[in-house]
Length: 354
Image (cartoon, rainbow, N blue to C red; front, side):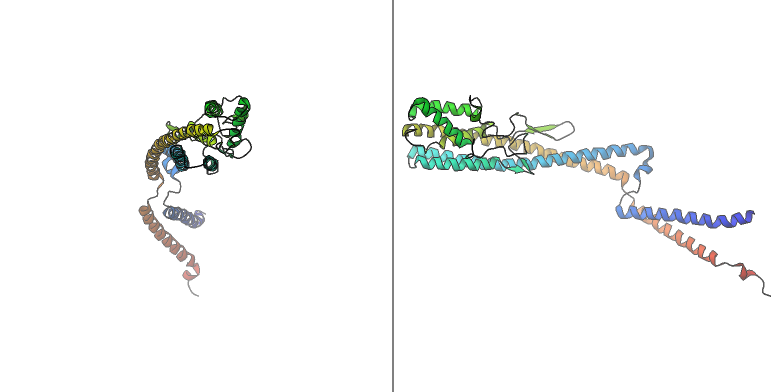
């Protein structure tokens, strides 16, 4: 009876050994092809928690890198737009200054240039990045600026201010009346005008008005913040100066030549200030870009260090695995050969012939 059990056990044992070696071979071949251990957690045992911590840290670092990269690209877009705005502002301001000193352009030409520039500025301020408005503050799903020639736009608001001033005086405005008109423009652009429809925020500008800057995490407990909204003073002053100039083509029955000249001078002063302030804004955003660049470098270095530590736990020993594969293949071949030889044995061969 025992001999029969032994006879059946030997093939079963060989089959189990072959299955085990084949499973080991498959695992090792997989590790060599991927370069990673098949089950690093099982190999680490109680030390697996450290690997979990490193993987979580790697995920956080990846998220920070993505956030920093997106913010950097968004600021690149904002800087290009601001550079364009500053350039067109400076051009108009220089035109105004040249007209004031040489009187070689008609007022209507300046007004036409101002209206065209205002449209261009609105288009620039409606720039988007990855589907979100760059100059809308926390409101990024809609363009922040209303078209200047649209109902409720800047041109209509400027005309409404002039109409009210002419009606209040009962005749055309002259040089002495421009100070009052300037005060009305200031109320529009500091959002204190008694008519809500004649306020920059909510009228020309329809983006966020909460004043909250955009915050970007650059580390576990570090962040930077910036503001690119078109609700800031440099942009308000740009639109104020251009909307003032857009009135220079009105009939003399509404504003005489002395009034237009004074309005031209005041608008030029506003635009020169806007040009300078836009340059300052670009500089402040440039400083933020520098911090983001430094943070990106730091996070990249930290992520590489974390990945190196993770690899020390999960990376397969390709050379050692190759040696083991060779040994297993040799053992399997020997086992298969032995099994073949045993299968060929027959008691008939050993029975005496009659």
